[in-house]
Image 1: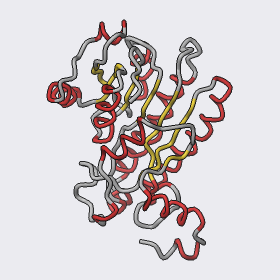
Image 2: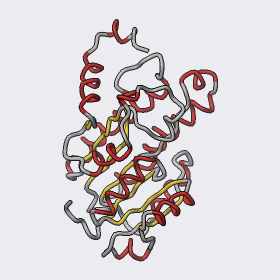
Image 3: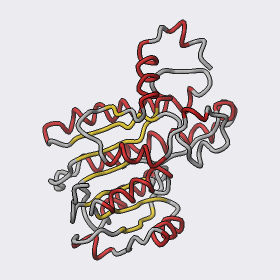
Image 4: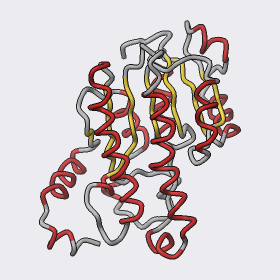
Length: 254
């Protein structure tokens, strides 16, 4: 792997299973990581377990791979400006991986669950990424990556509330990609299928289609210039089918 000593990766929603695997890969490449989440204690345990040194000074001055753990609440929009202002260094790469999910059945009768998904999966991303994108003083921003989902490709009766947040997020990233093109900042949407994570642990999903967090993380860390990146050959086929399937057939899907 190419080493990238001194470069900064900001991971938002860093306690997600995919984010933690991505952090390990970024550290292995020599990046310094600012890991931001509400679950700072769990991130500290993760860093200790994986032998990742934690040092704010190292992050700011940059020679060695290390992690700086920060508190970040995607749904606390009024804290985002201060959070970004207090970062020890401006990021070269930003990964938005914050997650929250309730079943469609629950979301239909529980507005708080629906609203929380909207806040974490879409509105929170817009709030913090707008601030990052509009920071003209950060002249070394290279890339913004969003962890999206195939659930947002077409509306389906089994998950259309969750899917709508991911669809909105993908469209936001598409526009942000165009907006940042003159500054040569690459924007990627990782449009993932089913992932074996703590969020999907209670769902009845086909085993043959489940992907490991490490597999998705590898796609994140090695993202190229393409906008939509669909990890896994089976999911690439499903993505193409979903994009072209007539609405009359989509209506028959679960």
